[in-house]
Length: 174
Image (tube, rainbow, N blue to C red; front, side):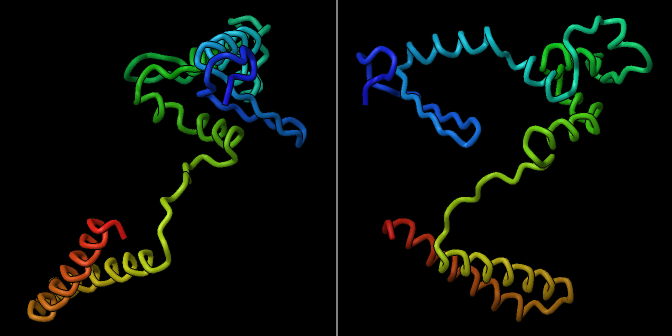
């Protein structure tokens, strides 16, 4: 597929934009994608996006924004206002220092403050085997805790059988 802009190079970047339920797809070569990215950043940067989501007016001067008690990371010294200005956190500890504010921001952006992500695709049989293995492991742990070692050994052997069966399947490409 050729680039939608230059019609010369092969498209390697594929963008999909949804605005008011209208889907627009754009297929770009690497060079045109880079140029388009620079144009988009000039018009609408990450800081603008974050500021908009945090209900910050970029025109309000710094004294007003920083008035009152300001959250500050105890590790790197970054303030929440600094994050609002540049859209980047200073260190890993900032996530803890600004956790309440970041949680609110993430809910606005993603609809949740927890990453749900995608799960790898498993067929039903594989999913059932995983559930069975997890159940057997838990049962074996319980038997060990109650010092029923003979029964635990039987379950351990069953788990090994099931796991070696899965390994064989994976090696055969089935």
